[in-house]
Amino acid sequence: MFDQTLLSKLKGRPTPFFYYDLALLETTLGTAQAEAGRYGYHIHYALKANANLPILAKVQKAGLGADCVSIGEVNRALAAGFAPGQIVFAGVGKTDRELVAALQAEIFCFNVESVQELQVLDQLAAQVGKTATVALRINPNVEVNTHKYITTGSAENKFGIPPRDFAALVALLPSLTHVRVRGLHSHIGSQIRDMDNFKQTCLKFNEMRQWFEQQGLSFAYLNLGGGLGVDYHQPDDQPVADFAHYFATMHQYLQVVPGQEVHFELGRSLVAQCGSLVTQVLYTKQGEAKNFAVVDAAMTELIRPALYQAYHRIENLSHPGAATTQYDVVGPVCESSDFLGKDVPMPLTERGHWLVVRTAGAYGQVMASNYNLRDLAEAVYSDQV
Ligand SMILES: *Cc1c(COP(=O)(O)O)cnc(C)c1O
Image 1: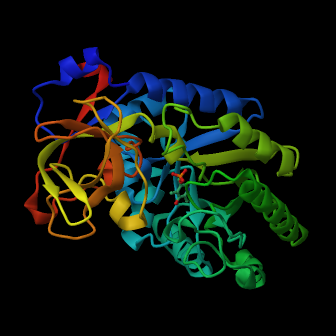
Image 2: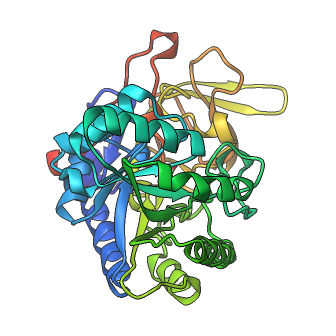
């Protein structure tokens, strides 16, 4: 991606900055849509992965819907041109103000995460004279092979309605006159590359759907969430995530009643690989047993290593030779967890070199903060250079 032509165009820009390859984004979106389209599936893009307007414009143009987890994201989706009928509103802690605003915007569907939220939504909808279309987010209790902070589908988890509440929910429904339960939803976590996790989810989901249908509910939409992972170690081997395998697995194991639409909410797998964080080496330091490269990007630009011990591939753009040394690549923020990579193999690295942190398009810029009163990094798009 970062060949000499691109580097010479980027030269002179203030670092750090995010660089987005919009051609790769388009290819990724096109592949995802084609693979989902084989089975008539619909994808809503999870804005929380990256909500930059030029990214959203491409997503909207590719025909995906929007999956939002705050009214801020709902408003951003509307600003990016998504129709209200393409917007889903999820999240475990929607405030009354957010629910009312989303009701007034007449979004497509609320993914409801508890019995209490369903009751509150019913009351608020009655107050504003609307009826809310709802999908029940169930917790399928599937253990997934990913970092513990990004699993969401196991029993001891704040997300979703646990099975022990199902009977009470069904008993309550006839009294709720301003909500219309039309969908069943689950999302088990993120950065999942083991297809067996999705298979297990489908099997649990089938059981739970059947149970609800036996109680007299019928679902027009099944929503299996997101979670497909990407290759952080070898981004160039698989620049586009394995959508074919993902949707084929879902198609194989998810039972669908005729007339039911199937929806997905993908975030990371759509935008992770198109984004990179470019940073400059400020200082190099030799510790007792370690070499440090102190760079001008930090956890304020990319918090994933500090937050989830996440791995990102780091390359030296100024000296693309063979790796001879290992460096801890660390930022200027006053926290020991402020690192971008540990024991990173690189060629001899010097002050002024540009490094690139790969696969930073998802959960990167969108989690930026100005802690230490640092400036926010800019975004550079491939069609602007
Ligand atoms: C975060 C989230 C997603 C997107 O997850 P990815 O792993 O980025 O695909 C989808 N649905 C819900 C409810 C989420 O919270």
